[in-house]
Image 1: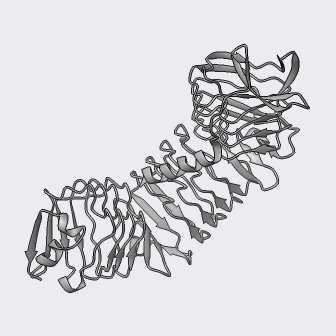
Image 2 (image 1 turned 90 degrees about the vertical axis):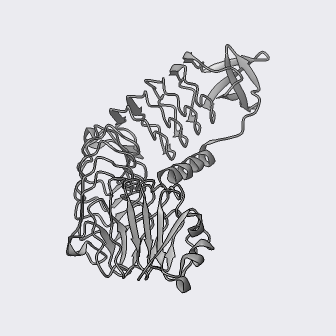
Image 3 (image 1 turned 120 degrees about the vertical axis):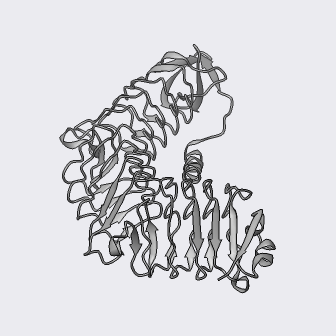
Amino acid sequence: MKQNYLKELMTALLLLCCTAASAADFEVDGIYYNILSSEDKTVEVRSGSNKYTGSVTIPASVTYNGEAYSVKSIGNNAFRRWHGLTSIEIPSSVTSIGSSAFYDCAALTSIEIPSSVTSIGNSAFNRCAGLTSIVIPSSITSIGNYAFAYCTGLTSIVVDEGNTIYDSRGNCNAIIKTASNTLILGCKNTIIPEGVTSIGNHAFHDCTSLTSIVIPEGVTSIGAAAFFGCDGLTSIEIPASVTSIGDYVFYSCDGLTSIEIPASVTSIAEYAFNGCTGLTSIVVDEGNTVYDSRGNCNAIIETASNTLIVGCKNTIIPSGVASIGSGAFEDCDALTSIEIPASVTSIGYAAFSGCSGLTSVEIPSSVTSIGIWAFWGCTGLTSITSHIAAENLFAPGNNAFSRVNKSACTLYVPAGAKEAYAAMEQWKDFKNIVEFEL
């Protein structure tokens, strides 16, 4: 489910970015400092007991106990979640901006990074939704993970031409890692230039104002969550050069109505297209040897294992499919009915999670396992018909039917099997268990 992924992401961000708070060494004119080196007389700006608000000007040096100290860095979490903060002036003495230094400073509309800065930490400007432009100076040699993630207001991204590590070639409005030709950050005005070979993890994450993007020939990989939450994106053409699509790449891109997987793609990671509730058409090129959409089924099937990994509201599960993969129809609230063929033996983790429009489901006798959260949140279900006989009955994974109204949803079971269902975990929670003749 989407909330599970977001929880995992936020946990990762916290591990990457957060450091425990401790008392500042001293305070001058409302700004708090920690001493980095008593010998070199250097300090870093850090978080303090009072919040920074409005416009803040950081001095190049401060005096403490009669001695001058040079301000060398903005420390981890220094201005984290201080929403009144509208502008900041960073002096040329600063060489590093720490992890989460300006995390969630939503009122910050502009930032000038001085040419003295060499590193920007993990999530340094994460969730600074007010930022409209970024200029990366030539001095920057390191940009951490998620440094500008969720900066949804960005319209202009420029890297100084003198930078040898990063570039924004051809006025592309993006940050590209030069050596690997990987685009690591884009915005709604990005034009992916020729020569880029990969779109990095989270490059356009939650760029809700992105409505269209052209991925040029030559791009071979699209990284994890690259377009996660880009719900304004209405169409995407994956070029024939792409071989791998990372996990959660187009997750929750509600505006997408169609997907075409070229023959070149040999790897599609988990949840790549989950939560794309607008989807009506899914096609895999006939030349693809790893995936298929046999019989115009409007789904992506992993050919070797006969596992359906991505479905949509128009999917017809073809005979021969052996399993419905993890999250295959997750959050497809437009799905109202589905026929599971007798070839299916397993229904994966969260396979139909969040399919609130699904009113009935029939589980064939061939099914031997139902994963955790398989039908979580299928609030519209009024009937489940299970053909699994008493002697073959098994307990579904935890919370397989969580948030299904078990008082309003009738569970139909084979004649003579009611007692077995009523005694087993997950099944026994249904209040109305009715037998039918096979």
